[in-house]
Length: 336
Image (cartoon, rainbow, N blue to C red; front, side, top):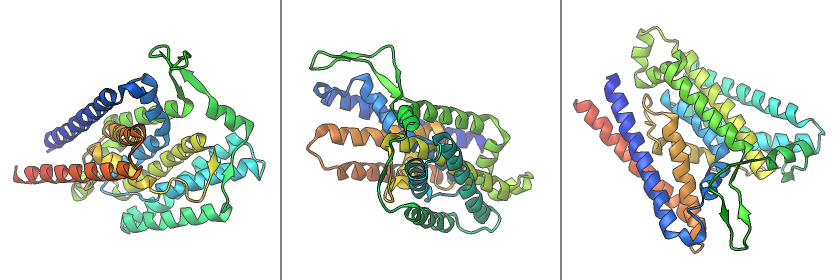
């Protein structure tokens, strides 16, 4: 059974990677005159989606257990508003606020994980309550849009890590050196840590076991409720890291911030090969799912003539395709 799961996982991952390569290559060919093929265009995908990548890693861990977390968008909005108001109106230190944001994420995930793991309430219901609570608390802190001008935070947001290759001369004759922001480094570190955790640790294997067959996991001696609780704590913790990255990109707090981000995270995980029923998936696939999501948006913006809603339509179509594909694999596995 393990080999079959690994084979299904690998095949879904290969399909996702090939799809991204074809999509990005098509963009480089069609929009070569608009600079789509420049290295900075690809790096901008990472910069713009650093927060989403952190969230998608946490979402993948939850979905591996057969659960789901639709509260992540509201938690990011709460994080951003807390950071913005804390620095601009309460006069608190930026580093202290960042630590408090991570603590909020841990507490948020602990409550949701306890309800799912020990009280056995449906994950959708629990996280929907968390979604409403997060948006409500964001509005309680402030209903206005609050821009961040804190010197430490601005310096952090403007930090550039230059890439020593892939530069180009723009139409004005100025040489452009490719760069990434600090948020990209954080997101890639999160990706690497979660990948290693899922692959080499007992907790990572427990997530797969619980999602693959919960009864078998119990018979193996695994503490299923605790495993689920830890999965939701990890998801909310990574979401708070993503919230800090998101805030560094937007430099503001807003009640409507990150609306629909939970769907982007779920779509990225599913497109990356994570089964909705649990037990199969990995964060490398989710990483490429995030890149596909970002590439579609970039292609629509580069075109200039298409409405932004077309990116949502394209993602929806891909999501349906991968859900059908997962269903086909599941049927094949049942027959075998």
